[in-house]
Length: 421
Image (cartoon, rainbow, N blue to C red; front, top):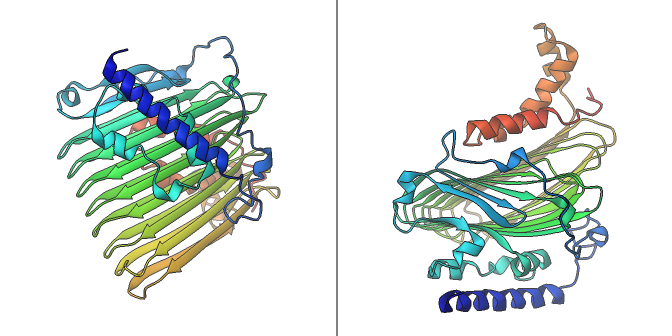
């Protein structure tokens, strides 16, 4: 290892030790904490030790070579980068970085170092500190000013038999640049408990545009924590699509921060639960400057004995005048044993805003069912069409067609519960 790399490794190790110390010093949140009361954290395997990997398998999910409109592809398998490709056009762009976290150490970009720091909103978040301390690899993207990328695709495969998995993603899109990024978290099922923790940070500098899609399809048996921060500066736009239907249970905390006039962040989420799956989505949007916009639309479908939580909070400070924002959560229940708790909240310190929120929980609409049956569609097929179509607004936003088709196919195979009417 050369002198520069050795210095970078020491700096990173020192930073990790600092976050580890902070993680150890933060108490596990209590059940009375509004943001954790549905999780039963005492049974979360957050200190699960890594196990020796079982015999390697040939996994079709691991092949993400350039195809079907991708401009870049990167595959991490058990935190090791095994595949990395970039189109000929993007390979010639000076200052463009698309690599794994370990390889990033070879780059001396001050922007990377500055943005690897935890956002202030996560300083006292136990699980964000854990991910920052223990992440062994991840993804780093920097798009230089004025550059437009085609879709970049990252696949992160976790063999659950290894026990524990820690990951970081950092996306920095510079002034007037545009990035489309699809990130998949996938993994095998396990009869033993597994634990995954990921930290995602997206920074959109003035005038830039980001379209970020996240697909979580870890195997059953995995418990997870995900912490993500979306930061938009002046006139920047961030569009986020979250699609979760894997793992056994977990929490996703998404913090949206509009930090410059004219900035906007739109978040769409979709979740599909079956068996005993549990999803907890904690979404906060903060507006501290004038003339900003945020929008949250979240759809959840729960079957069997699955559970879901939408915990939304819209915060507008007194300085956030002329803010336009909303949070909407729609839910479909397919079984008597499935439950959804929806908790949208507003904290507004100024009158000069346009804001609203809303939530609904329902079963399959009998009028929709009747309409489809009147056109010769069987009752079972009609019910499945309604259920699968419920999440379509989010799935249709996946930029790459072959991924979109696969996600639709996998969701269709999930349980349709009792198909309550």
